[in-house]
Length: 145
Length: 201
Image (cartoon, rainbow over all chains, first blue to last red; front, side, top):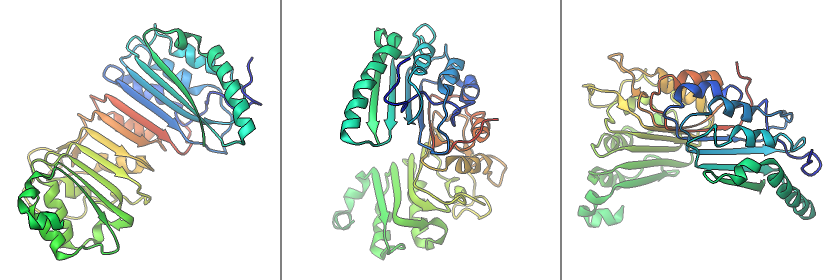
């Protein structure tokens, strides 16, 4: 298990997008661009991976471009691997671009430096498939808000 | 505006227009005369420094804006900080394809939209407005529910969403989104944001 700087970041779940996959399923034949963006809510800080499981429901479609923005501050980083697994190229044959933006609450300079270092370790350890993919342009970005 | 008044021929070349209303909400008369000269506008952005209540606009101003929306060239309408817009006002925007609603805060946006009679003309167009792109940047679901429900006097929807290709909306009600998307048969692009955390059914 890799901890992302004192349990600060994890994949969100129990999120506003629970049920998203079922709603989108009738449209996956034509849907090409999908974007999900969550804003922070201090009342909901427990996440367990809803977005990967919802994405799994619409795998096999024609989505070419996928963008996910999450704002997080809690738990370990091990759940990111679920996202990497859910977006494996064999399950998303048409996917060309995946942009993941992780927004974290503002911190002081030294903490940001340590977090960025930790983040790089998480990126390599948790996204082996996407980083190695020849067909998907995978970009991951860390932002401070 | 002054430039157009000096060289009226320019008016025929203006395709994109942004109108930012200030404290002089109703505008000076020469402003309305200038709007009357425009004949080929494709996109219109109406914004306000604070808040513009569409239904309190004076009729000459509202009619001038509606005339632009009813031009055959008109395809894109952006409303920024405009509240109480009337969906019925779009019935005659025959070629409207893109509707963007930005920075509105009232949950009464669109409410009773079909109660008030459209201004002009009286004869309804043959088809509903065939929208292709719809964007709401905040509290979106209440707004798109109103769009779904709005009907013309002949029973047809004000806006036909069958061909909607792009939807960008803040999701505060997953069930409402589900209902809305059932109408859309050719959805190519979907952008969802969440500023609240509802429970899915």
